[in-house]
Length: 257
Image (tube, rainbow, N blue to C red; front, top):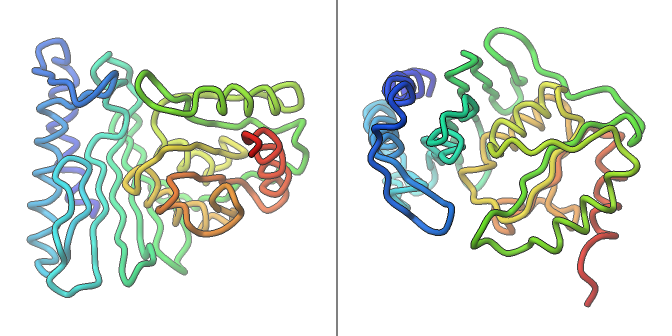
């Protein structure tokens, strides 16, 4: 996974330096895909297929490729934060997760700009480069710095997000929105954020981050407190002290009926 991510990152970094010359096509309103994005996905697929020829893929750009072994899938976001990338903002990542028999077994999130590689394996802990990750130790919502994603043009949920921010903002230390869900989860695992929530995500946005949070000692659920994050596209992550009060406040802001 690291070898594949590092190889894809080299080309992304090269193109990031020439971001104004990139050819860009619209995928949807305010949702772009660049040549660099597609090239990175192709690199990751090629490298991972060479290493594990029987594994399948769940790809942001390329869709689903069935696994020959029937159980093992690489879940890949080759460029999380495409809009940041195309605007020259140095905050984006490569995300890879391994799912076997429906469970996430390993995850890797590479931030090429900061040269930080977050990685976790089930039962083996979570790390950034060679340093062990732990979720924050804060216990009061009033001290908590949270991260989220705000729906952009063409995505539903604007009213709900405004309600959630209104429910939380006057009783916590702050809310941040950086536009890269995988890094939001990695930073929550590292204790930089005390919690993270978002709606409307895809499996490749969160798969690697889910195991990162768990292996760093945190809790991660859907908005109902269950484990169907990958199906629902909704996620709430925090340490064991803050998860319940965060989830309670988010439920209070949910639309009635």
